[in-house]
Length: 224
Image (cartoon, rainbow, N blue to C red; front, top):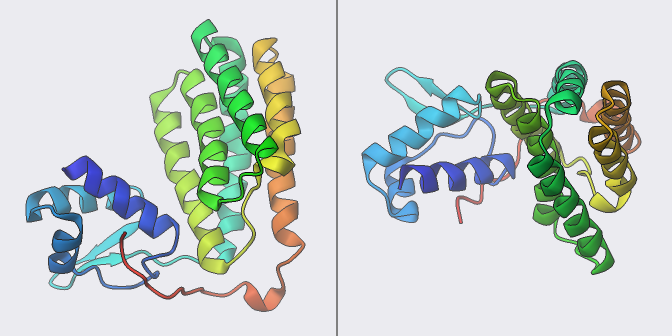
């Protein structure tokens, strides 16, 4: 029950369905999620470790704040950490992980061909590419850090209403990363990830204006 509550709350926060800075009403969430106080508290504790939730003594839990500026700060960190991960993954990736990446790439191609337009699908593919690469690097500390960074950077896009990554635009970059990992070429893998992250940042820079680089809020719609 705690794991299910964690996943649903995490998704709602990342999608900005729970507004940054808003108080988390435990009684309401217990009813919506159909969980007791202990599983909910366990889920909230996990989310505090990911910087998605903050806790204030005598006041309770709150959704952490974020801004469009956070996206760029997070990606500065990702440009260093994810490139390192790709270098390690190129050396350590297993045959089974190569097969998993190939299957994911084919799933992405088929989804694009079918005209998948829902944002959850696009983000799901992108997150799985990063998760698979992090897992292949064989360093659990790096993998945990990247899961946290990815969630925070995506949430900053949702909150600031900045366009998200579309698989249609990234297929070539995903394929380049896959081929580099398959060839066990650390420098090509690092270059492929650099290209992917650079492209993501450029897509954000095009529609954004200086006036939007401020603390952002989003209407709360609750947890599904």
